[in-house]
Length: 319
Image (cartoon, rainbow, N blue to C red; front, side):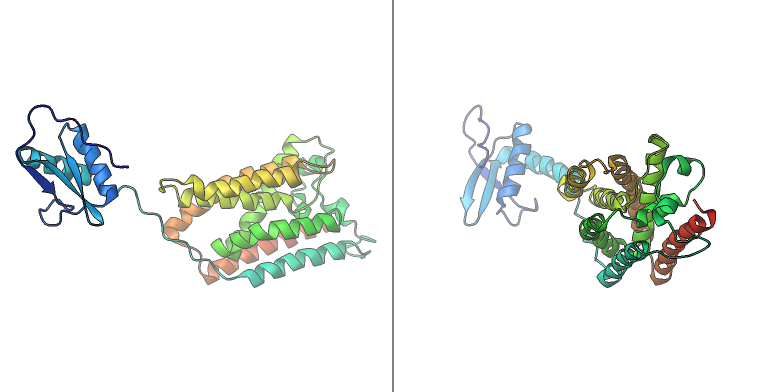
């Protein structure tokens, strides 16, 4: 709908002059959107106007005696709003590294299968993987830092593992394609470890948990924060980042809040810690860009070294 012109007090103007779309006196056909905004400016300045349909567009007319003032007011309005609304950022190209991500997920499944067998290693006959690596709150707070990482690689049963791989794989794959594998897996590990640390600090010292869910919720937090920063200049940024947040709440309801063996605290802390990590990561990428091949490989190797080092520490410490 086009707003009606304001009432004109006094006699009808003897002459009406059309305003040009660029205020340069050339083209006088306006779009519906331009007509709507300009008519509101004129009405706010108490300048009479009227609109007439011209083919596929509109013509906006003002009294001849108010023409110069109308052009001045509209030019000021256009100058003040020249860069508004801000243009949306260019879509970030995704890296096709799904094969790498799938192989990492397969490795996690293979490790679960390894923990189901009796293996003699580093003086353990056999290795008690769950006892050595679970997120035992009291022992974590006593200095057994490796449990923050090793607990992420352990699962209670195959249903637990399958749920994490299928659901978590969706978010992890997206994060890896967005950031590249190196920073993505290192951030996942960081959010999972810090989430386990926060959970251990607040839980009863006897509390124990296993599973990659903390890191998976970290991935959801990372994606939500990255979208929020990336599209912060968008007029309606909520459309960009509310989906990951809604997904997190849905996952909390589905995976994180049901069952006596569910560690809601670890899930929640993973998500919350993923938020600031995602904000910082996206700000760094805005200024430095995504890492190159060498840096990506270094970050990926760092994530592997942390996990392997954590298990070496667990095996040597003996629980």
